[in-house]
Image (tube, rainbow over all chains, first blue to last red; front, top):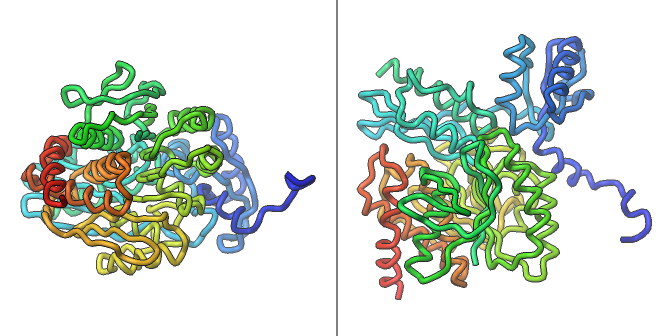
Length: 184
Length: 287
């Protein structure tokens, strides 16, 4: 390695790519940012407080950078102590919105709801969850084990036992399925 | 030889590296057994079934328990970074794992320094992190479904959860999404896209479309993508070229689905039973 190469500045794309697995937690005010920072650091999360990018600047202006994949679990921790973030966005594209488009397929006796990469299927008559497919984070096989074979009413919610963005997508499919099944 | 890297949905499952076998419908590694429901165990079971038909040795597994908290995945990344350079696998299939760009890049840099570079296949979480890190081009094959293809085609999305709606819309044609994936350089050498029709593509375009033996229910059965990845990885391990392996794997997975007479409530272990029969039939047709 040439001398001082280790001091070389990273190319902008390279730096952006390294941030692609990080997200920002946006709060109502600085006091909440500080409370959330203390809590998350105390329980061992790899986070840091910083100024927000211009796209999401609102006035208060501190945000917490965190591992985006684990959004579902971190937001649950913060919600449980009464300081839920008002917004969660990816660091590399703060204007992106979580998926809000559902694909529905009617198989006659069964109904499938897809949210992003996650599909949840129930038997219409019993409202039993018969299959969960898609996804790539490690909580997906775990969530499937916990939910398949149970009715929508008795199944644990991905909000309670999920951890990742795939778990979050499954939560959206699960909530949409519950909403629709009340109308069947 | 094929190596498979993935996770088991059991927090207590220790990090294990070793030959994987299939015994009474459970995968077995270092004396520990795991039921085959979906995910990496389904990939391994499918690969083992292919190996049995072709007289190939079973896969080598790198497995750890992780239920989404990421601790198991971290252990696995660390272990691979230390040990992978001493191996000489023909192909490595990376599967369910917590995406982490720093660790992904470290593993890739270890692989790039290996004397003989293995063929790299990625699916599930490892495919996500390969795309997130901007290093899809270091891989030989991804096996996305149509929803994941939309994520690969979205140059901004860091995870499928943030894929933009105009790309997720059902009417989007798969060939257009494939072109977009290559245009934004988020693609490996080959793509095997599973769906109503399976597409095999590279940067020159669509190489093959497999649309026979359609079973609509396969779309919703958890693990049918994992079996496809397992079949194609096991075929590549026999030195078949990637394009041909992808076409055969697609046909075999679909035909196994036909033999299982699936409904949306069918579980993937039923389909796995029919992989040997489907493989023999497809190979005899293909000559």
